[in-house]
Length: 136
Image 1 (cartoon, helix red, strand yellow):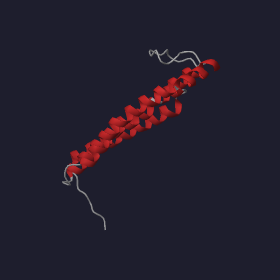
Image 2 (cartoon, helix red, strand yellow):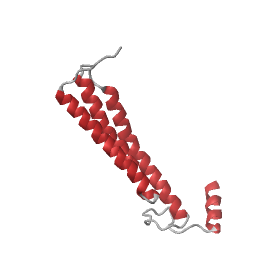
Image 3 (cartoon, one colour):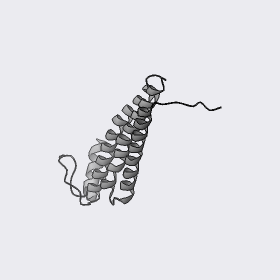
Image 4 (tube, one colour):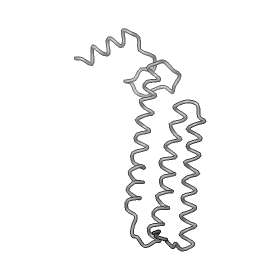
């Protein structure tokens, strides 16, 4: 028992192009994740996959459900909005944590514009002083 769906030609072309575009972006992002060397370069590839690829697949889902007469595809739109909101925020937090850690270990990274984070690695005396001040 198969439910055959008959789409108009324009919808088949649109859905096919959007799914193909989303999958190509996912492939390019995956290659970027594999080929780039440092964490700071690689962090951008998954962001592109999650946002651009997801939006294209969401539009393909939206066109498909609309063209088949199954109504407004709210579930696809909600998934895409959720991903569009959470991926950049997560990426920012991961990058800030990686920069903080790299500065603490003395690696060569861009300087901090914050007065709180020291650009030089902490000495043992600084660590002891920092833990003493955080306890009080």
